[in-house]
Image: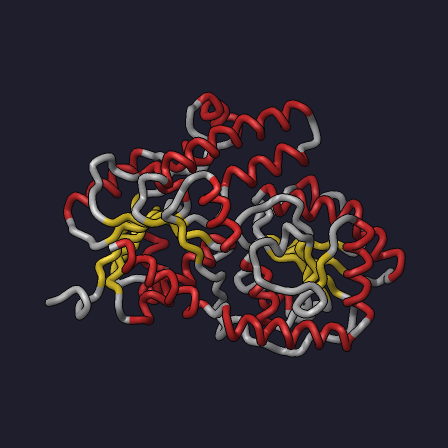
Amino acid sequence: MSQALRRLRVAFISPVFLFPADAGGKIRTGNILRGLKESGRFDITLLSPATAEQQHKLQGELNRQCDRFVGWQPSPPRPRWQRVPDLLSSLPINVAADRTPAALAAVEKLLAAETFDVVVFDFVHAAVLRPAQLKGATVCFTHNVEAEIFERHAKTAASAPLRWLWRSQAAKMRRFEREALATFTRVVAVSERDAKNFAAGGLTTARAIPTGVDLDFFSWQAPADGSPVVVFTGSMDWEANVDGIRFYVEEVWPRVRAQVPNAQLRVVGKNPPAALVQRNVPGVSFTGFVDDVRDHARDAQAFVIPLRVGGGTRIKAFEAMAMGLPVVSTTIGIEGLDVDHGTHFLCADGADELALATLKLLGDGTLRLKLARAARELVESRFGHRVAAEVFGRVLIEAV
């Protein structure tokens, strides 16, 4: 049978189990996999860490993403003090953490036993699991320019030792990204900006895909009236989110509450740091992990993305826009997304500007509706998950 008539056999290797879909990278990957499978043109084997209980409980969800799932036993999380020796590794600390014996053995076994048309490594970290002898078409799905994130942390760190640590890790990540990505047939970037960043470093194989959101799951409704509610969603064990929320709570929120004393800020995301939660700032609440972010965001008049550090694109922005939530974001928070200030969202940098933009949304129902309608129309026309998966699929075929 010719290649044009049969499904392309894809091995998709992720260093993280994709459920719960509680982080931007996992959400993006899940959307791509569902779109690829729905197209009917790919036979997908997904390989990632997972316990037997996770596989059994989530088999239905896995079936939506792949034709076959192969799991390896996850390594238990290590406390930070046990990870200190990893700082001496030539690898960045988060890459070293993914290079476990179970992961290496599982990848080696699968790729030795079966033949695939193309092997995809999800996140640049996963490149550390690539067998040295692997031949054929390979693709790395990058969700960020990781070195850029580390460099931005170095600029915003509060102390000289932390700045030194982030700079050291940034140098290691810059080297690892450059050397690892050069070995792949194609590299997928999540924005044109990221693709150009890689190209500036000499990489000619990067291809950009749009950020895709599940438009059926994140259905639209008009922005809420009623009590003034501001919402942020995102994993609160990711340092960039912690930094952004700490800045918003300390510098921006007092300005908002001074004008709207009954305003409420709801931070929706797993594992918020105890130091933030225990401050008990008036009007601020932390939900921790939730099964469905929609239940905690639908009543918001403003969806805020106050990030000062980050990379790639923030899928949370398009999820909010798809739902009809008016967005206010820093430049970094909306980076890489093809949206316009004043049409699809409000852009604001610095405490005064963020407070003013938040207050505009809380106080102007007409503005909320205008932004929400334009944003949903944009996301529907260009950023549905099927559109993103179609472009990703073309990159896989190009690689082969």
